[in-house]
Length: 246
Length: 382
Image (cartoon, rainbow over all chains, first blue to last red; front, top):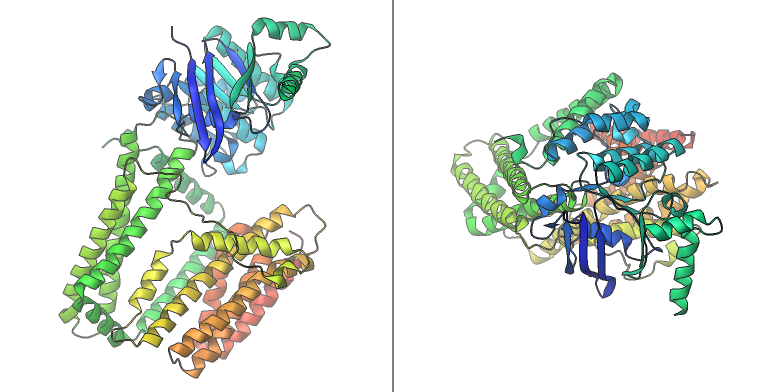
């Protein structure tokens, strides 16, 4: 079985300012990876590249074995991106958005699973209201629901817990864990909320100045979790200090 | 062709329109108000149309139709830009919006752009033909120029529109730089009266927004109207005056629009700060008032170059400053309800024009009453 995501030597610059300098990343099916790093480290550019919004200047991206450059439609069919709340169409209702996105993925109507998750997230009462009436947290829920339609092999989320109430945030994390463990989906989660992420993820990747600076595997993360004096946040800060000193 | 042949943004737009229509029906008072406002605007447009001087307009069209290559080239350039700019903006939107990461074939996007481009071109041709027929209805014996003018318009607009469509659909176009709505906003020189006053950031904000929009280009309708207003055999000073007046009108209109939009954005930004309305109003009035002063000076020079009658020389400053004050009053009044600003301004303009049609001094009374109403209403808490 091919990797859910394979990124090879990805590079991109804005003008003469390099942002990604040869990023290599691999996500197997079932992986739940947190992409971490300080502001300006290249996380957003990396996510924009692998969702096809931005064409990187060099390198290769394979989603579930399909090359994003040569077969963008095939690659995007295997990718679920949680939509940025700012980009949601305000003139539509949540249900209309879900149906439209389902149709694009070749699904005739809103999947039952999406409606079930909407109930768990307490989003069901908002389904038939216009998106422009939603709060930030409600928009965030809809953006995540749109990204999860059709259980794609690779799910990408950028700060998905922003604005979510604790009950919904917990439900989303549980759902993502279920998708990775039971359905073999891979999740790439870009976040600064390390204390939240470290309990659920199986791997963490630190991005710094456009390069993969440090990687933590499942065993290392378990060790961090079981040591009350340590945390992923602390490990990241120590790594950043070490790299700055070097 | 099945709906799946096109980009889902068409479905999104249709659903959005349906939702908006349904929502409007749930607000009958507002719907009635809008219907009345549009009805009044239509009635005034009809009244203005019936009083248009038919013979000079027909003579201008006839003169343009006698130079088919020049007129055709102007119309083709106009149609090219009118077609290209919105299609590139749409392409850019599709490449960056919530649709960007979805598996949508390029062919669906291309077919959608083709469909929208064809509809836009058809509308443009229909509008041009409608305008010519309307001009023909004002005069006797339009046969001697109508047919030629319709052909020139159809060929010029058609050729330019198709070229614009082809360029907008080009595969390897750089969307990062094409279809941008904004240019750079760095002022060329300082303006001490704005920068040394209290709360200078608001005026600076209005100024750079105006510069960005003006330098981004566009507004082809306005440039076409200016181009078509140039009569045959015009003297060089008059031509310079006409072009200068055109630039003044386009720039001033833009400065007022951006000042108004910035007031709404600034009100939202400072809503939770202890900023008094009086200070906010004065800080956001300086740039538009300065722009009005500049427009009055350059506009007066343009009128002098055209040897315009004294009535125009007296009327232009009143019109420019009156327009500015009304825009500011409406923007302050509706600063927390941005959707109402455009409708309010349109309704006020209709009322003032209507009053002027009945008896010209009534326009001043209507203007004073409306400005006073908006200023009083602006003081009420949102």
